[in-house]
Amino acid sequence: MEKKVVNGEGDNLSIESLLEILMILEKKKIKAYKAELIKLPEGCLYIQTENGNSYYKQVIKRNRKGISNNTDLIYKLARKRYLQLRVKEQENLMKRIGSLAGVSRTKTGKKTAQMISGSFSPTEKLLDRYGRAGLDIMRITCTSKQYNWAKAEYRRNTKNPEKLIYATYSGIKMRSKSEQSIGNALEVKGIPYRYEPEITLDLSWMEGVDWLIQGRYKTYYPDFVIRTAEGNAIIWEHLGRVDLEEYRKHNMEKIAAYRQNGICDDDHLILTFEKDMERSETIQRIIAKRILPYM
Image 1: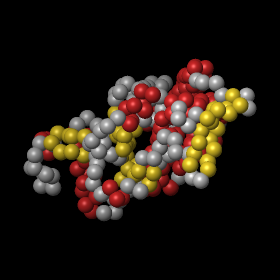
Image 2: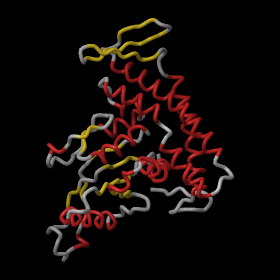
Image 3: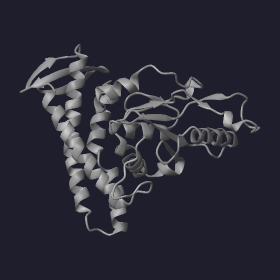
Image 4: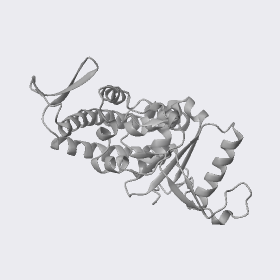
């Protein structure tokens, strides 16, 4: 994966560099969103719920037309409203980014965290409403190419399916509330991902280490695999139970295998812990710094 450098900086982006990246990204997104909005159908989506069932209508100048059998139109109208909100939010976000110019580094850091964490609350409310109405949120927030990749058939972790109880906005069931929070944040940003997909890594370089299995290759199931604009992968592992010895051992092996197979935590690997979940802006900052520059 190509690493983007701003003002000559690489691995450790300063607050100023992060703001500069955000400005470039927001301008690009707004332009793309407005271009797509022009091509979307006329009117807006109206959802009516009766006896637990959702019915969908297209509203054009106060005239309502039932479209419950037209799935494609439903999602186009849902995405239209989503993009309209995103344009407003992105424009407001750009104003806030611009207002940070000249502020001290400490204050800038605090304001950046607040700005990022509070950017998408109207969108989240909209997506929650769509989700409750039975719509696939990722189909609304992602481009068709991104969505097709995320929803394509792939081998995934089949162990302990009874533990998959925390559903994201898109209805993807996960094993913990922390993973659910990460999944929701990715979906709101329109970032395509696969949950616990199967990957096979070469462990031949680890021969002789007594706590490894025998054999050259081993299968792993990363928590999240994210697809970048260039088609590369970013792995996000959330290490929620490092208090358990077997859990620590398994994840030490997995992270070591990642590194030896070129999946390094400067470009390709994100690691989070339960402490990172205590403040919602932590996830937002990780996404802004480690993922969005590659989308």
